[in-house]
Image (cartoon, rainbow, N blue to C red; front, side, top):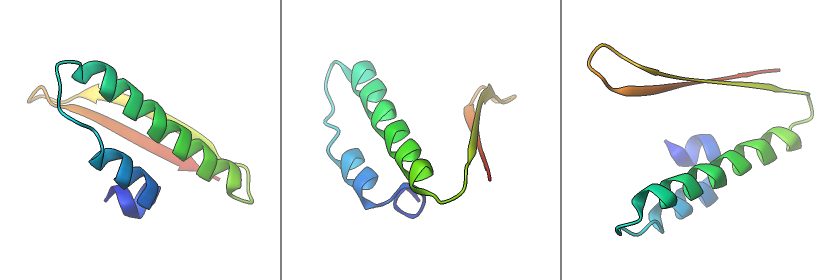
Length: 71
């Protein structure tokens, strides 16, 4: 799914994430890399786009994120 939405480069970045004691900082770094990829894709699009992100927790205490891209 990552490849179809963000491209092959992001998929490769996900595969390179090693497991270690410092998982939180790695998740933050990976999130920032993905955010940069999303912004670069949006900037390359010929029309002006808006991006809206919303994080929530459902009734089973699972985190969810909603992403909306509007031309």
